[in-house]
Length: 309
Image (tube, rainbow, N blue to C red):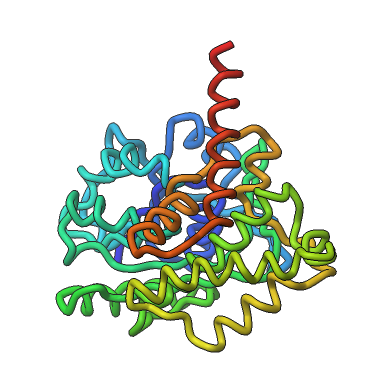
């Protein structure tokens, strides 16, 4: 199966590099500047699981090619419209495997490509891209979960799994992909909302007198939304999130908090705002989500004002 990866940033760059190193037929759709950087240096990954510097094939949106069996979509949610426009010429008949967080992207991708061509997907990994284009793997997680949302997708899902299995990535086809996506969103929204609201990693928050209580209350607001949608998190997930969100020694923080620290754009609407909107629609009280979203919205407004000034 020929694979197309949109971008060569953190998530797409890491997974794509592992795929290329394993001999998979993978091409990266990138901007001209990134294409030149990759031509000069290869795709460079620094990881505790093994460093890479891999020569890779690239195309640009002006000539993206065709005949791909699957497209790995790992853009930021606020770039989704541009991503759809970029991959549309190349994605005819392909399986779209989105690695975006939340749920809002599914409706937009379904409208663009048809539901039978849009799988479910979850990436569990900590990565960032440095100024020189190096992908820095921040932990040892490298999980890519994908699954069929319709019966018609099952053959393509099986072919995609066979294509990525030799890469060493912890990849698996899930029979419960929507639940997997909801569980990822519950955890991500909880940690993003709290670390952004407090502007701190997990450890100092959990160590504060009321921090653990607030962390778990935020998780329960998000869990209530997932439950109302018909996807109550499993007990193993609840135990995992409890440990992660209350670890007083943890230096973990959401990438959204790191983006705020750098004055960058954030996925406020897609991760926190949409969770809050769904809570309101279900008639559920969500005061912590409201506080976190307001904090993020104020940040964005001030950032926009500073850019205009």
